[in-house]
Image 1 (spheres, rainbow, N blue to C red):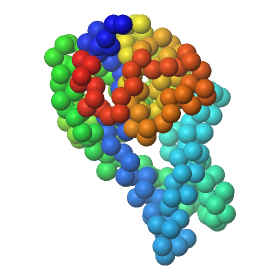
Image 2 (image 1 turned 60 degrees about the vertical axis):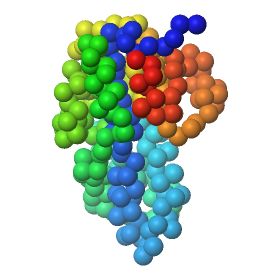
Image 3 (image 1 turned 180 degrees about the vertical axis):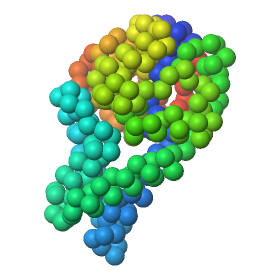
Image 4 (image 1 turned 30 degrees about the horizontal axis):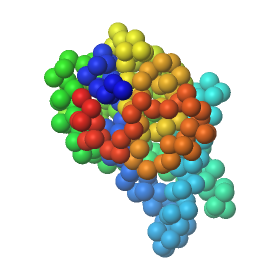
Length: 247
C-alpha cells in the first residue's frame, strides 16, 4: 500500500477553527456571559447549554448548506442561541440575542490562538512549493485578519469564507472557489479539517482527498454509518503535529 504523502498534492486546503487555530475558549466565554444573565452560578448551567448549543449550531449550518439559502455566520449563531435558550426554557429579548451573537463574533477574533505545531507544519509544506488555502465557515472577514494577527497569512494563496460565495461547507461552492483561485484540480488536492460533515463529506463530494484531524476522538465507524463509506478520509490523525510524519 502506498504511503500517504502530503507532498504528492499540488494544493492543500485547510479548515481554520480547531484545525489551524485553537478556538475552543471563545464560545465558553461568550456563553458564560449570557448565562450570567440567568444565574449567579452560570458554570452550573454551562455543560448542558454548550452541548446543546454546539449541536444546534451544526444543525443550522447543515440547514443552510442543504437549503441553499444563505444566512450570515452571525445570524447562524443567533439562530442557534435562540433555539438553545428556548429548549432550556430561558426567556430572552431580540436585543439580548443580538448582543450575545455579537459577543461570539468579537471573542472569536480576540481569543483565537495558533494550534501547536502549526508554524512548523506550514513551513515544511511551503518548502515543497505546495499551494495552500483556507476554507472556513467562520465569521465573515475574520479568517484573513486572524491569520494576519497570528503571522500565518504568508503561507496561504487564498482564504475563503462564506461571504465570498454565500455558501458554507459542506456545500461544494467554497471548495470549488478555493481550488479555482489556486488553479488546482480536485484529484490533485487535499482538504484537512476537524469537522467530519463539513470538511470530510463536503470535500469528498467533489473529489478531493481528505485528512481528518479527529480532535474529539469520535468513532470513525459511527461517522461512516451516518454519512456513508464514500466519505471515508484518506488519513486520520489525532492532532495537527501528527501530519509532519506524512509530508
